[in-house]
Image (cartoon, rainbow, N blue to C red):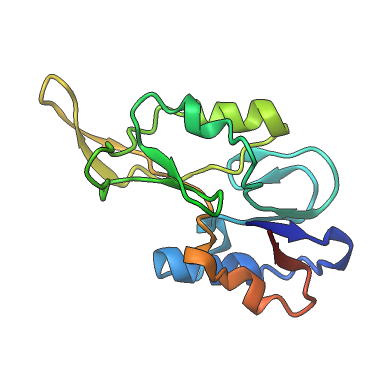
Length: 164
């Protein structure tokens, strides 16, 4: 399962990003979305993007480079080929993400730009191995809203759809 973007049909309205940020973070802020709308063809959030305007989702790769790049066992892949990234709620057998950025680099190396995004501020309390308390950035990516992507539902031009 992955998202297919019909870039030519996109009106760059940001509704997909607003639906995502509302669902995932409880705020209506396209900069806090796991799907980015590139209005100028230059930058999206903290990411540099080459090319024209359009939508940048997670590609949900057949062989995702982010998964083996994670040295902390903070990611898993589901039967639907969607990679989940665990922050502070890591299930048994996994560890919380420490924002080492290796998954971001692996995604960028494969696609030219990463679809794993960095939060705008340090918002997670972490304890280092020496016991020191620090604040870390969060990483986040599309998890297909558990199989019911809000970006697909809200798009007024049907420019985003689910494909198997």
